[in-house]
Image (tube, rainbow, N blue to C red):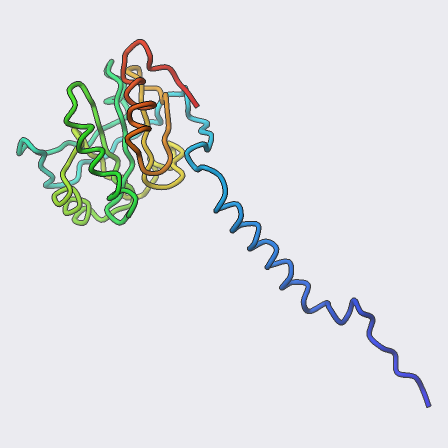
Length: 198
């Protein structure tokens, strides 16, 4: 009678190894996504000029004054006044949550607020702004997402403060809060304080 060799314990668990590796990676990704404050993500663009771009307007979009709202270019952000640039989309739930704060912000005197409509259907974007109000003096349609990628956008919404000479001074990832507007954005709109920060 011959002895049948038993499979080693390693061979017995070999089919489970890929599953264990997958489970470990999935757990790591989940932990990474759950932890940390996304607004603390560093931006390589802080202190640098905004990327070169030309964004067309959202066709047939009217402002509160009934006039057409134009698109904008990178050179429009280097006209001597600091500008808040908000990246939004009609399909973004967090954009809807922060929108009343943007509408209130736009009502303040001396605020230049521009919007970049990110990878959105123009009709949906117009309905979004018609329903919730249009706080933007200019809205550029970034249907390909190329401009947002060049800015370093992590995900919508994101908000930037651009100095009067066209450099990115500040980046806020995620929906704005009253505290972020008061403590971070508004101080940077003062001409002598618009210096790049984290």
